[in-house]
Image: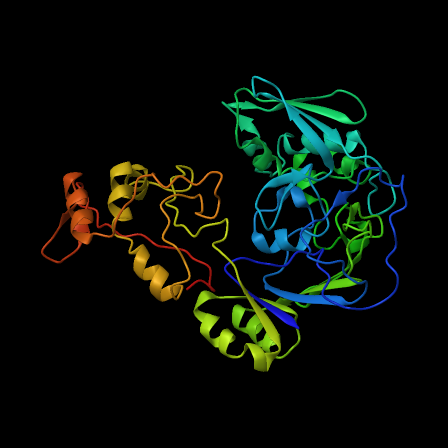
Length: 424
């Protein structure tokens, strides 16, 4: 039976969807003295099978450090790990390549202990040198990574030092409650594969592991290995035999033999492939819920209708002076202007009509699903066009006889919204 998910993607590459094949390969201790035990699955799975999924857009790189788009991130997600990871059900941060951590009393010093026995997919052991190298990479001048900004607190980059072969210490300039969540963005890289690229400088490193790189050269610690990439068609993965995750019975994960991610031209094509039985999963748009629910039994699939996701939809005004000039830059940098336009957005109607009632109006970037950090008392901006116009008038915007709104210098207030071609 196939899967349709609404609101929250319910599939993880560790899931067993195919009731096939032989006896599970038991993890032989002390291969990995302290493997990560996956507790999410309600039952012990069986080995074998291929999971087929699809996405719109090609990967732009195989270099996980410089990823800026979700399509590339999704392609690389089964291959790489970090020191910590988020539990896809609870949202809590859990140990990954690091088996544990401690926090000092002043809440500025984090000490992590690296899990033992982990190997890269090419068989080489993962060591503390790989972790130190990964940190060096993101803070190297010229490397196109946003992780360095995330790991900068109080204007100062996080400091780190190796305590011994298994322990690493981070020191932040100030107490940072988000540190663990931000650390999820630090991908651990194989030094033996990428140190030569970094030696040539940050710009050269950005070009390493491009999409023309033979897939078997892409070495990670994740549950899968990239076997092949066919432009415009698919990415094919095989089980990583050195995976450090196990189920509750000690069986090495993943259960699947293979995973295939098909590349499709648009969301409609992705939907049609699912309905034709060519893919096993489909993350449905909220407006499609009634259609899929009605055809659930006939189509032999199951709908998983989850709660709100941990992400949110939002609009951003470009305030980069290197890319934008007045008058638009002046408008967008004015908090009063932004507050006025906030009142011009009808969130309730968007949630009801665009998302078929399967969305919740949001007032901050933090989703209501994120119980740990969601604050219900942040300032709200109820939909009120009269108030929006009055606030604009208070800061110098006037509507002329032609019905156009102009700023104090007479510039017509107009700008362009750029959105994904698939966005409704």
